[in-house]
Length: 591
Image (cartoon, rainbow, N blue to C red; front, side):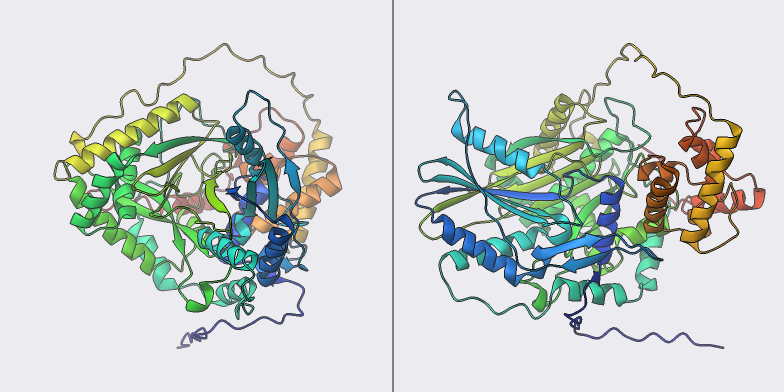
């Protein structure tokens, strides 16, 4: 018998050779980079904070302070490059320090409020996409709104930042602006962490826990929407802003203390109950951010140390809200125990079907912070932060709650939604209903969930409008043109996959293809055939036969045709798809 020997990872994070030109992506970066490949040129993962500055601002001093922070943190100088050779993994490259602070005068209509006009400009800056390869992935701009009135707009791509990174950035910016002595460079760079994290073997025990925990749990949250779900989920989104006043949040915070749960858990429980009502289900998966900053040497490093993991909330109608809160707290502690598994690994393991119409595993996100997103300060100035969420949508619904910058127990709520699914008025009604549900649950936490206010009328489906005129059909492909495309695709697949046994009805992923290998296929298709198509379409048509028909403009192309005719392979694929459908007792029925 051959025993499997596992070498334990070193307890410290080793430094990479600083002369090396590139470094691997972390697991979380890798998953996010893939989304960017699928939906390029969107602001989905932009993180923007605008800071109102009142008082005598020294612009050269501010520019110098920004340059000092950028020089200290390699992540702020990092760009990302596609892999060009098998296994086509992207890499991150660290550039030379280079920080800019363009100064722009506000051009507002005389009838427009100055603050509103400034935020309108800042939002347009927040929604500008980044070029991941050319960079930089940090933008700092200064808007002059009047004498001694400025708006500093800082935008970072999430590939290089997270919530604690913003706090580090603004904390060090304040130190540099005040002329305090420069700190020593961090002993650990984010690139060091990413290489160390990727070198660690996958934890089979942790993956096994997730597999058992999510067995039989629906991985698609079917929310009623104003419009039919498109075949491919697009990034176009909208934001609804709402204030949860102290009259609402004060009692909620007190109840959390009484139940001995965190405010995060209490509001998450209310949100999951709200989603369960909308979807008519009792088991809900909600994606929550989980930090990987579990080492002292990472606390002051800027980088993307967060990942998103699913939290299972079993919102059975006969349970009390108080009981469900305690259950969610226990569940969240388990998730934190098994957090070394990334969402990408879970999606590969637990969601074998790739449906471009849904985000994998979870379609609803949740974030909650008891403090404002940042608390900026600059010597001699009054600084007030304003969160500017991007208009791109990562999932169907994404609820973010932060304590208001003005202090007290007021909280700012932002509900980001897919504009392809929901109308703005519908989401406004959702936010209002969520507040009613939270107030009712806090008022009577021992009452069963079924007694909470109903969401009736929250989503009102639109009546079908007149059918749009169908576009003029493309000429049907000739047999010779389709066969030519098939031959080109076979050759491309052979090169990318490194194998010769390519069948026209073989599924790309069943042949060992990865998402990044698919990106290489996408590049070669454009270069060799001249055909233009989105990377997402390669997920829709994962066989050579269906992809060739799609590229040739065959109007009859559909995903159903992608099922291989070989019965043995079809049975194997069905077994993969259904391996999580054996429901545990008490699961699976909607209430």
